[in-house]
Amino acid sequence: MKAQIKVSNMHCEGCKKRIAKRLSNLKDVKNVNIDLDKKIVSLEYNNISLEEIIEYINEIGFEASK
Image (cartoon, rainbow, N blue to C red):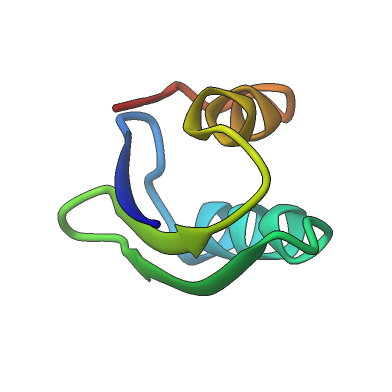
């Protein structure tokens, strides 16, 4: 499945790298593309819910939502 997640408090390249690294730990998440200007994380996922992915991002201090 494909999804886009809004991360309202992602402001810099450091934020982008932290999110990318965090998502790389999830084996069921692939093809992560982060648009810093639009504050959108696009990705593909299987065998995990979108809510779990959002919570996983929020756990490191970001405000992610559908």
